[in-house]
Length: 305
Image 1 (cartoon, helix red, strand yellow):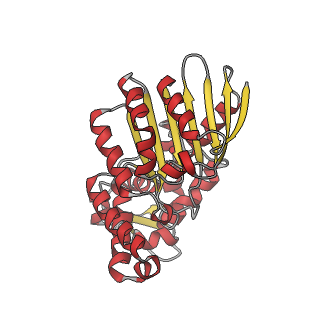
Image 2: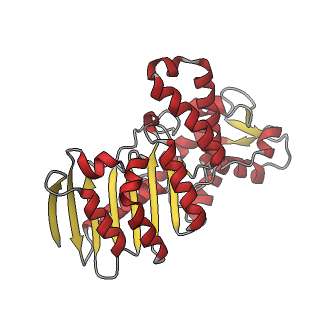
């Protein structure tokens, strides 16, 4: 194992990332946010990797709307030419039901000889890769130990139901919100039109493809299978048991400790708790404390993730 700590003052991390991209057969990147200035720094190396049948996957956060629309547009355009490019967004903390700010900076590179991990302070931006005062740790291993730990952390992010792949319609709405916030954040967040549009893209996020189904989708499937008819109620206990069975049988990668207990809370959250306030059009309860639920007509027609 070789370990090195670098600051951009000593050697811009963008140079090293470019080098690793050109050598790698598989690349995984998870960053709090990205900008088109960062994409431009590694553009040629990304294309070289993809053209050589390398696989690249990028996860970026949307917290505080700091990921710029131009960078998303660039990646979406590149995906059209390279199916071996994967791209996902992690929803804003107010929308992802975890209330967690997405803030990692992880770069993982694999080739036949070794595994390289870069972790530190660098987001996928021009400044982060070249001119900012950033500090990063580089780990090179032929027998991956720390790489495997970071890979597990990366997967714990990738396989969550808050992850989704944006499309052109989502990007158009996101761009409008981004520009309004960029112009005047305080004023924008109080603006009724902006608030309404944020709710629209939140709903859109749940309909876009991800890596695993959302809890909402699993609950809908459970009620459909357990009820004998559209007007029959199903118990919360039965719904919970069925959803857990789906997850275990299909080996869905919900990467979390004590996941059975946590998932039951998630199910309750979607049906009864704060999430239930958004799902009233999909689920109907027999009474406030009955623990019995059925699908509305919209619930039966729901086609989102």
